[in-house]
Structures are given as structure tokens and as C-alpha cells.
Amino acid sequence: MTAAVITESIERRFDDTVAVDGVDLEVRAGEIYGFLGPNGAGKSTVVRMLCTLLLPSAGRALVLGHDVATQPGQVRLRIGVALQDAALDDRQTGRELLTLQARLYGLNRVEVEQRVTHVLHMVDIGDAIDRRIGTYSGGMKRRLDLAAALVHNPDVLFLDEPTTGLDPASRALVWREVRRLNEELGTTIFLTTQYLEEADELADRVGIIDRGKLVAEGAPDELKRSISDDVIVARVEGAGDEVIQALCAIDGVDQVDVHAEEITVRTTNGAAAVSPVAVTLSRDGVKVHSLTLRTPTLDDVFLELTGGHIDHDGDGEHIS
Amino acid sequence: MTTTAVPAAPPVVRARPAGFVGDLRTVAIRALRAVPREPESIVPALIIPVFFYVVNVGALSRVSENAYGLNFKAFQLPVAIIFAVTGISRASTLVTDIQGGYFDRLCVTPVRRLALLLGLMVADIAVVIALCIPVLLLGFAYGVRFETGPLGVLMFVLMAGAWGLVFTGFPYAIALKTGNPAAVNTSFILFFPFAFLTTAFQPKQALSGWLKTVATYNPVTYLLAGLRSLISTGWDGTELLKALAAIAVVGTVSISLALAALRGRVRRG
Image 1: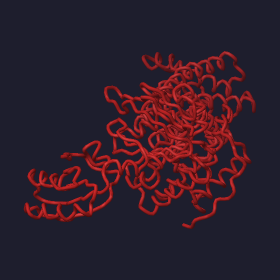
Image 2: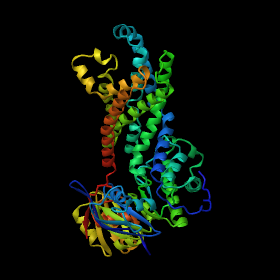
Image 3: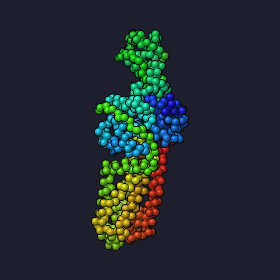
Image 4: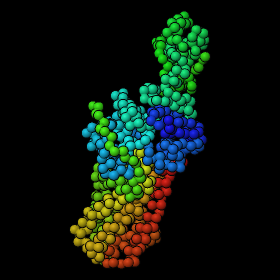
């Protein structure tokens, strides 16, 4: 399968700050690639480099074979971009904005009309398309943003946190559109997100970035399986080191992580381990608020690799 | 909201560069379309010159006519026009685009970067020429007549438009450099020395001291003289050339600043 996006040791520095630190990526043509990481991890900086808005400080990035540094014009013709926070002009109507966007990609009057009609069916904005964008809800703005990114029929679509700030219903709609684009048009989609379930739900493969470095890459199921088969999560009060050591000693327990008042026990057989874990906590006088057995999530993967949760400032500790 | 079936894909289109003129037209059309939607940005520019023209003529006509033998209504018409066209730009809109991320959206398209600025300026020149019309009509209502006839009126409007255009370079430079609406608003301060430290209210021979020195070096003095010559003298090549040179000098500075700021804004490094 050919690569739609390749980065080779790409870096970006802002004065003394290294925002992206030697990231190697390969996004295959036709896949949805989820780029997952907490706020400030470097996701948007990578996207801005791939979209030709920023030059890499070092390394190389190719989009559909074109170097983003030396062939930005070729890259811009082939990509569609919806940046973080729907970047629209509130004073235009949705239709005016889409028409303007199509014009800038050199489409003639007939093509503009066809493409605008087509993308409007895809993102389903309804009659509001002839209203000023300033009157739109957040979800409608996001869908219009998506339509604007698609109006010139791009081969690769970059979506930078497309659902941040949206309510669950609007988020589900955006997910549906993204899936449909990928399945029906074969568009390659590079999607950044800080939402685990979004990456899990949409992405064929996921890259996890933390503090500017790519820390893991693979299909979501592969990544989750790589850390353990099952996870037992206990929300507790008053768990000391001796309790943690006792949990580690239970048969079948691979690893115990402590993060604030949450203990995560990784095991190859959750059903067999959950009872001994409960007994150990109870025996040592730990107050247990909840005890949950589940399969691993991408957050568990992130915790394993970085020692912190993806959606919280990590202050966890790792005991094996 | 309901789910609708996506219609069969239209014939595949391939994105291609729209060409500089196409880009310019697209950006300018967007800017012009926004003008009537933001009357608050135009109404003051419509009222202020008319107000000052009426007040100045009412207050100073008799004094000036007695002292210098001027037709003060004709003498003040170019001043009112300069008030109308100086500082009118879409710079505040540009700042909104920068702050809201829309400027970045435009920058990820193949649009020529220069068209992003010049397209706004094309729209500005259309607006400033439109703003000349009510002031001119008031002048005609006051009985002002052009010695140079209708062609002189056209030249008068075009020169005023050219001045308005070159002055926009300053607010655009500030907008592109700072991306800050407050900073753009301060560009209005430039208007005062340009407009008032000149022969705006009295002929040059009536000025004295530092004001005379400043007015001598103020390009607007020569612009006003050129515009006045079209009304009162007839086709005076020397005055017109001086006026055009004044526009060119200010334009060279302001547009250079704006282009440098544009380069800085779209630089990817």
C-alpha cells in the first residue's frame, strides 16, 4: 500500500522549545490515521507542518510524494484542512464561504456549483447554508468547516481536533461524516484528537504523541493487547505501598499502576484476579469506592508508555 | 437533522491554481460583499467629512474669503474628500481573520499570498471612490464648479481614491504585523498630522512658523494643491504632478511596509 504522508525525523522548534522532536510517521493511502495525545503534545504543530503552514526545523515531510518544505503549492492542491477551532468567516453565508473556497482552488462556475451541492449533501447543513455563519451552532460550524475542506475533492484530509468542544450528538455526526468520507470516497484522513474514544472509534491506526515524541503506533486493538488482556481499576482511599506490593504478588498480575486515588491492575486473566484483588484491598483496610474489570483502553496504553493519563496531568507511579 | 443520501459523485474535479487575477477577484468580492453587512465601518466615514465640510464652511467662509479672497467652499472640498478617503480599509477585518484562524484557512489553499492583501485593497478603492460621491454632491450643492469640467471631476475622484488606497498600507501593515485590533485602531492617529498639519484651513502663504515648515514637507499639502487646482485653476500640470508624486512617495512607504508585514505573516519558518 502506498504512503499518503511520510515524515522522517521531523522536528519543530520555537526558540528554545522543542514542540516536535524527531517524529517518524507513515500514513497509508486510504486509511484513517488517528494522532492521539494530550494538550500541548505537538499534534497541531505536526499538522501545521504537513499543511504547509509551518516549516520543519529539521527532518523531512512528504504529502502524496510532495515535500512540504520545497513544494508547498503542490501539497496545497491535494489536501483539505479543517484546523482546530472551526476557522470560518462569520460574516459570510455558508454557501458564500464554500464558493469562495472552491474558487481559490481554480474551480470554474459549473464545477463550483456541482461540488458545493455535493459537499452540502455530505455534511447536511440544510437551509442554514444560506444564513450567515455567525448564526450557526458549534456543530454546524464544524460540519461547514469539514465541507470547506472537502470542496475541491482533496486526496488527503487533515482534521485537527474536529470534535473538541462539541456536544456528544454533534460529535457523533462528525464521526459519521468522517467514516463516510473514508469509506465512500477513499479519502485518506489524518485526524488529531485528545479523545481516546474518538481514536478508538474512527482510526485504522493510531500514533500516540507525548511531549513532541511519537511513543507508540499501531492499530488500536494491537496497542491495547500489547499491554495486557484485562485491566482491573479500583478507586480507593488510603492505599499504602504495602497494599500495592501485595497486589503485585497476586498470581496472574502483570503490573500495578497508581494514579492519584486510582489503582490499575493489569492481568492476563481478569476474571480470576478480580476476587484476590478485592480481598487484598479489603484485608489491608483500604476503603474501596469502586472496582471495575474491563479490557484495556488507549488511555491504559498511554499510561503504560508515559506514566500519565492522556486527559489529565500525569502524576502517576508505575510498579511492576 | 436527518440523514440524507449523498448524491452520485459529480465528475471528478482537480484543484488547480486559480491564477493571480482569479485570486484577486475572489478576495476582493468577499471584501466588497462584507461592506454593506458592516455599516458601522462605513457610516462614520460618510458622516464625518460632510459634517466637517458643513461646519468649516459655516464657520470660516466669511473670514477666509475676506482675508484671502478665497472661494472657501471650493477650497474646503478637497479637504472634505481627504477626510472621507483617508484611513478607510478592511484592516480590522483582516485582524479578525487572523485571530479567528480564517487567514490560516486561506493560507492552506493555493491562493497567492499577495492577492490576500491586494484583493482587500481593490475593495478599498471601490469603497473610497463611493465615499467621495456624497461629499462631491454637497460641494456641487454649495455651488462649487470644476474649471476642468467632468474630466476634472473624474481626475479628482481618482486622485482621492489613489490617496485613500496608498494610505491603507499603514493599517494593513499594522494588522499583518500585530494581528491586534487595538493596534490597528491606533493607525488612525496617523490621519491627524497628515490631514491637519497642512494647508487644510488656510493657504500656504497664511501659514507661519513651525506649521509652515511641517506643511511644506507634508505630502498632503501637495495633494490638496493638486486637487484644488482641478477645481479653481484648470489643468495645471505642475500641481498635478506634484500631487501624484506625493501620492507615490507615501504609497512607496506604506505599501512597502504592508508587503513586508505580509511576508512576515505568511513566513513559515
